[in-house]
Image (cartoon, rainbow, N blue to C red; front, side, top):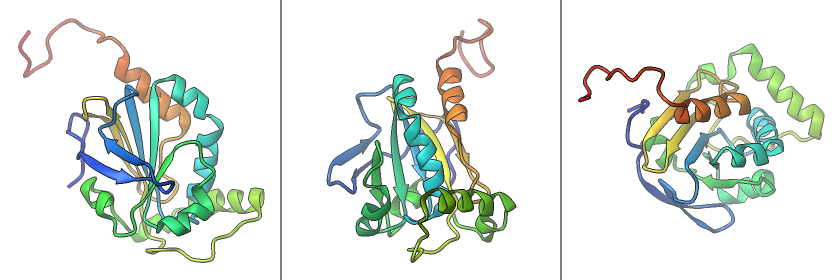
Length: 191
């Protein structure tokens, strides 16, 4: 079942690849950005996370803590994600993927943007993955969750390169904290 804005995010306790315990919802930051990526060596995912890493101070200043899931083993993830400035969680059984409604599809690799994004990672790092733990058909997903555990915004990707970029994430945070335009009650509310 896919989540929608206003849904309650599934609560969970997980362990990062560096051995720290993480709770969702989490205290300490007004917002939590959950990213569900594909396999640890995915060139598209790693290029995307490099961009997120470069702008991590800006993201943190906006009150957002980031947590990234991969459907790979901790050992595989340590090779690719250990240096990232945010917490990463191995989910090789896709337990958390199922809880958040994150799926797989052949469309994951069929979009032309996927090739170019992956190629940028390979050209900029000289690295290419040796194996795709749990397959190459995973789709990405992004969730912005507030401190109460409510889904503020979410995106289920249609292909491997279909995720929030930093500016999109920051816009959603800004929209979440912006005062309402009208003081008139919304339909279905008591006002």
